[in-house]
Image (cartoon, rainbow, N blue to C red):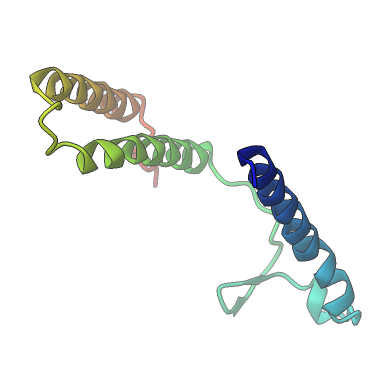
Length: 120
């Protein structure tokens, strides 16, 4: 079996399994839609009042900063895995240090702009 045939097989299986995951709930899920399915339900507690309230923009900014740093930390995991190899010298260490300094500057910038400070 050639490499392209294997690739085509895996792509085809991925499409088939993806389609099954999207179509199966249409046939297996219950059709009853009563009053309880339209109620807002959050963390096991019934809501009081309207669930459509506006949140402050600081929540969204904090979430965006969190996601950005999570993605940046994901770049550090592969580096940490190969750091013991002999080809990894001082140049790589300096490059990682520069990367971490830039991340730190981004945290300081977000802090100075008031993203991390919560208003009471």
